[in-house]
Image (cartoon, protein in one colour):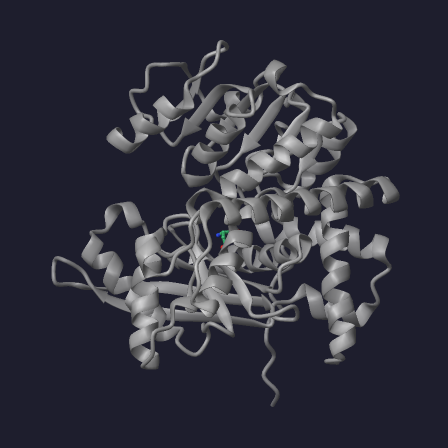
Length: 425
Ligand code: GLU
């Protein structure tokens, strides 16, 4: 007798990032007239690996963590993408994030495919020793998946240069040779790149500046609210402020802080370095994270989590320009509402691609064994971001579609053309 397996239920949850990704993919694929075989090949990941990671905790007990690495595509080159440590990590999320990395690398024209990893854990509740053991266990379990020419992790939510240092060390030990190019986002002394820490926020700033020019917005007469004050949010806020824009609101998990006269972002960053979060920050009136999104500002930078702008609140958003610092902050169900209201959205796969662009520069420097000045890194990264923005803008004009659909069109076309040249099916 043949065993019958139950088909997995189709995803119908619109807050599921995989579904949001697929809806955008479908729309762009339709405009591109993608043939069925290419469509089918591009929509599913090449590889998805789930591992169980037993870790001895400080109390002597062994706790088992779930780790994931999904390679969505390696058509354009080795797969590239961060590793996230968060309780919310699950296979669908990692699959969506891996596909986003494919589109992101393609849209800025760097020779990488897309991948993503994650471990379901709460890094804030773990000691450094526990995090180190967990990270080394992850690398050990994924030693045949990752590699400098195969799949290259980087920091993401809940991970940082220290995590990358452990990964690089563990991989180098296992492979018996120094392998700095196996991860990017490393500390400088271990072969990290100047400019990498600020790279994502810098790219968000370049995207905001390019969009403001197209919309004929004067930076010194514009206001901006930034949701999230981690690496991406805080640096985006700092660099957008330096363009002359008044940052009127910032937020983190402790809440949102609003001052219509403007906040001093350098001060706020110092506050967070000292107090670990914005909790108790007095320079602005406390509002909720939801209220921040709906403030009467010119620019909104969601740089926190997925699914912050949904069909529920999209119609109340007053900003003229949204620059997505986070991955997937807008649910696909909100896209049409924002478009109908004439809001320009610089999509995540374009706006936050500055990070992976400088990761690419880091990898190039590691393989060359020769390091660039910060000025050179920034100049090249700015050029990559500006050219990608202009290209997506042109395609949006041509197809009379949103910047998001245009970014998907550019990247899907690139991956599809490469697949057909390589002739792998
Ligand atoms: N985690 C970052 C992202 O989502 C950076 C990835 C990388 O540098 O590989 O873009």
